[in-house]
Length: 482
Image (cartoon, rainbow, N blue to C red):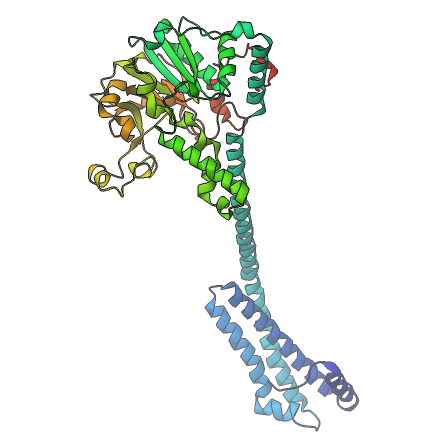
């Protein structure tokens, strides 16, 4: 395009002179400026289309051609010589022809811009929507992360109601020590002809629900013996609870502290050696300021879950109960809904562990639990094979002793039970069918959303709370929100 000044003092000066000398010169400048303005507008739309990566190559080509056409008009020899390079009077016929060509191009440009504007507005809305979706996804990811952290904190923290209950029970024992003296062991505790259960927990209210649900659903409760093992801190509170709210139906209850099993010491139990090592390491960290304290391994060692012997007692069942032949291990987050004596009638075919087999995608496969870098394990087992669940396990203690499972931690000898015996997931899965739950002998609140926590899944909570002894005065005083 002709290189004419269009802004600043030069343009003003030229326009002023044109007004004094030749009115047609002013028209030339105005037409020329109109052409330049539309070239800028067309180029702006084309640049924006490229920025948005619109698939309108035909339209982009038309924009480029139109911008070129505007420039080509001013470069035509006739117009250039008569309108832009001559100092003489302007030929009005040539000016009209120049104006007509410019206006034709302007009309085309405006039509194209109107058509393109709809596409750009739509694309702009799409882009804004994409930006919004991206921002929402970012916020959602952050919220999920914070929610998972909050859920973990809620699950691992001791709720105020549980702490209150333990304190009330201890206060009761201190106020009335004569009422809570330990009794002599009952012979039924070692009678192998009865149905024996083991529950390892430091949660008083949870244990009370498991015990109550066992007894209420037992056809012959007087044949059932329940062994509860807790830690030193909670054993007194546990005993006071069951003194104040005795077990019903003639069933038998034994409560012990893990410390009473004196063979469970660091010279025999590997995990206790690890605990002692962790405590020594923690002492060193606190006193020496070891910077490695932030790595995952050290955090794991600090977690109370990994320092509790209660989590490892199942490995020592035959030695804890040497006179028993079978025992049913239950977690403290289960509810029994049916008589369980049928489990003792199942032929385990010489296997040690009767449990429900579980597999969800890649979860609960042998590869997650067993070290397949060991040649013997690699030759013997399939890493994709389904593992079994803990929470309700019937153990043949004679087979356990024969196979020396405690020595090797061999959980290889397992026998799968029908899934209707044990339904899992009530502590994390909101989509378990009611039929599956109602048909289950035992329901398991595995996961972080335990039924005694505020974050429990409401649709399953009543299945647990109906076994809570809500008439117990301390439960009412400690505001369990039942």
